[in-house]
Image 1 (tube, helix red, strand yellow):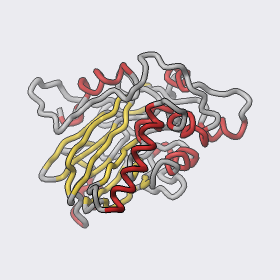
Image 2 (cartoon, one colour; image 1 turned 45 degrees about the vertical axis):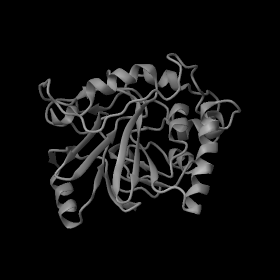
Image 3 (tube, rainbow, N blue to C red; image 1 turned 180 degrees about the vertical axis):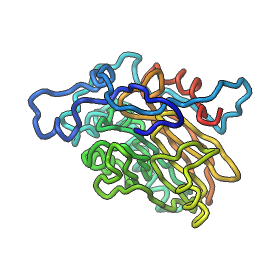
Image 4 (tube, one colour; image 1 turned 90 degrees about the horizontal axis):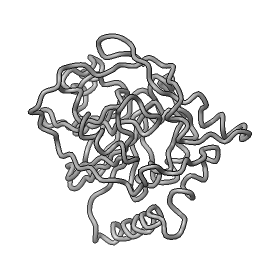
Amino acid sequence: MAGLGGGETGVEVPQVRVGQVLRQKRQPLLAAQLDERGHQEAVEEALGPRVTHVRLQGLSVRVAGVAPEPEPAPVDELKHLGQVAGLLPGEPGHRARVSHAKRRAARRSGRLAGMRIGVISDTHGLLRPEAVSALRGADHLLHAGDIGGEEVLAALEEIAPVTAVAGNVDGFRCGHARETARVVLEGVRFYLTHILDRPRRPRPEVEAELRREAADVVVFGHSHLPHDEVLSGVRFFNPASAGPRRFDYPVSVGMLEVRRGRVARSEFVPLDARSEAALQRHMNQLSR
């Protein structure tokens, strides 16, 4: 993964992809083990001095109902992750599934306006049960790239319709996902790209695309750093990585509530206890 201005840094990436595990099924791989594997891929480490007066845009952090040290979950049966995370009686994900059904019924009857948009990125072949649980209840999902296999998209599509882009790890092609994507949800125009560079200095290709056709929200990934900032009326949103952990960065997903053509609320959902503080520590680091 290309750096953002200086040096290459070692990161963590799973040695075994989800697709490989699904095909072989001989040695189930545990999600907790993936965090401890050495990443052999060079990526950027965000630069720039810290400043103490950075205004965060609409940050709301909540713990996604996971224990500080959850039992590792096997990912060799990816197609059943939804059942593991959301369909067991008494589990938080089960309640979210029921709530989602009620929301759909209410929306059809006209009693409920708006949509919940789940945002996920940089799964690198790892779809955590905690991420599946956190995304249940969303009406649409956005994946910002470095998917790591079509199996990940298939599992997400069991939750809600998916709009996705492929990242550099995917060769900018993964199933139906390509390098960029656009979608309009509840009147809000979304533009997706994996590599933005920085919100205040986007890549020239991104600037040209936004001049050609405006967007209300730019969703991006690649840095594994959480970002939620409005610049000149455009929200730049990166949910951070939901896959293998890098450095002391958080593992998380994002959720956007859109109503009447605008983003009414945004939040980040940490996927483990370590990530709550990490979200606060690294929020909007790309603009510092």
